[in-house]
Amino acid sequence: MGNLKSVALLLLFTFFVLHLPFVESDWFINYHIHVTNDLPLLNSPPNQPNLFLHCKSKKKDLGERPMVKGQDYTWDTKVNFWRTTLFFCRASWVGRKTIRFDAFVADRDEMTCRHYHNSCMWSVREKGIYFSKNNATWGNMYPW
Ligand SMILES: *[C@@H]1O[C@H](CO)[C@@H](O)[C@H](O)[C@H]1NC(C)=O
Image (cartoon, rainbow, N blue to C red; front, top):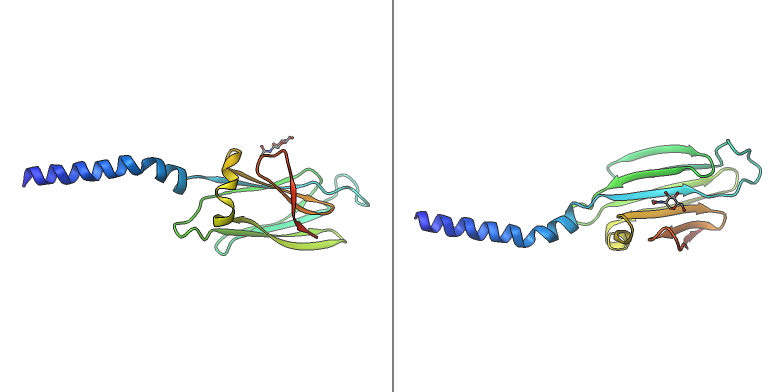
């Protein structure tokens, strides 16, 4: 009986050691989501917010925030067990346009966002909402 217990323990231990890299890389990653206001200052004075951003998931409301040019709206999230984690935002360019976009969709973004410090980077610009996985090249994913 004692032997069987040791074997069982050894198997359990081996299982965990073998799965550790998987567990660490997949389930415990903290993703950093950034949404930066890179809108041009057209009629609004520099210190006046020209963008209102409101991001949330089904479970968590991050609140609406007025944003001046250059300001960053950021939060962290992990991917849930079912990989259904979803954060979406509403961006309102004051007096101009409003759009809703998905800022983090687990099965769309988790691999992509691992390229650069586990960060998903969004930039609100004159032509739409841009995404970058490396903070260098940007693509317009949600034109206004
Ligand atoms: C992206 O690059 C800019 C400078 O070009 C820097 O200010 C910013 O912190 C970077 N963002 C991240 C998430 O590292």
